[in-house]
Figure 1 (cartoon, rainbow, N blue to C red):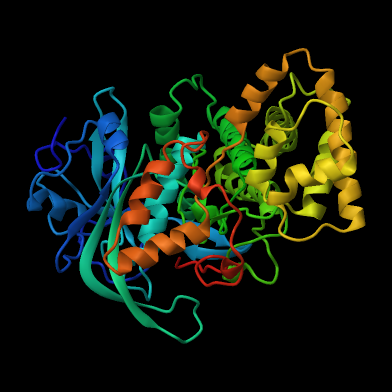
Figure 2: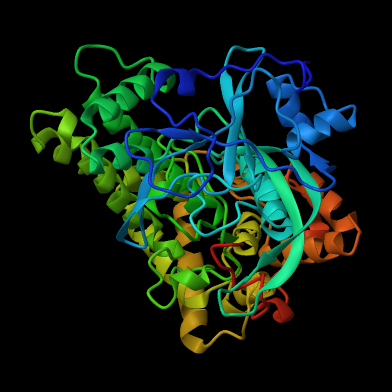
Length: 519
């Protein structure tokens, strides 16, 4: 284990690419460079609120033993081998070209080499202004920082590819925020998350040099990304095989989101990782009631571009933007378009296989497509609590049952009394499912084991996060600590105190059902 203070940090990204080394954090356009130096702005009194011990063990990072090391996590100290910088990238936001964006409130300190040889970027989120902060202050509040810290770790334990969070630090400063951009700003407690990933490169990282016609920078970035993160891709022509793998990773990522009921909320191209990771946690949510049209992001209303049921198609659209960005590196676009068009088959093959595991099927046969379509229609109409429905499905008696017994079995997962049509859809699906399950080539116990591995019993619901944040703001961390434990074991019964539907009070509560991009 090595201390944050004594580690020799690598800085291969800044040594490879052109950057603005001036340290000037005045917001501005930075053509020709892929990053700008940005020293964190000191805060009043950084204190460690949370530490991910499992991630620390994986990285070989020693937990801070003194204030100087906490100061690193709070942005008050930079070691001699660090080179703090903000990355320059662009993006399409809500379907529109936004031009230069960049790390407006994130500063990468350096690259940490773990004992197993993998290198990770350590990045402070909320550490102050950068050249890409535009009209903002580069800070983050406790509310958004707690959400990112807990959720990125929760996704890891759910088995969803994700960036992670090593620490959560309170800054002792107050930060002015207009939570819903409605003209009601207020001071909130400041906080900083140290987040970790092999790379924070995103689709927008490639869109930026492409838009500026900086083809040499684009080519160099693609070559470096492949050699560093896709070293198995060999041969003279690497761009298409690399894009094909990004397409596949993105398809698998969205399938995993759908498996656990995760809604990202702001799938702009600058929030899409080229490593196939969940990145940039903002107005996210898990589904409570199964509503394909649900978006947790107030900025996404009324169009609901980033609703739960649209995430697969939006990922395809975003991949199209990445394809356009790398097109200048290829002699033509025919093969590029053909590679992009593999997305649909890849996604649905993975998606149906995932649904099969959630249902405990031995395999997904061609004739099972009808059952899976029936499942989706029933869920979207009945809108049971998604997590609880699948848990009760695991426990469904093997013997055929009549309508009253079936409805009673799932009753705790319903948010409203079922209509006659809804009861009919539920019963018809359960009967069809029972017939298919009886044809399994595996035992009932093996089927249930498949289902337990595919269906989480604990999810980090927004109302729980809201309650934990409220307590922390009052100086209490009881619920926060419980949630920090529960996220590490989401498939067991150990935390059944949280196995419950969203309470009625949370349906319209700000911070539970309604979130903004600043969340």
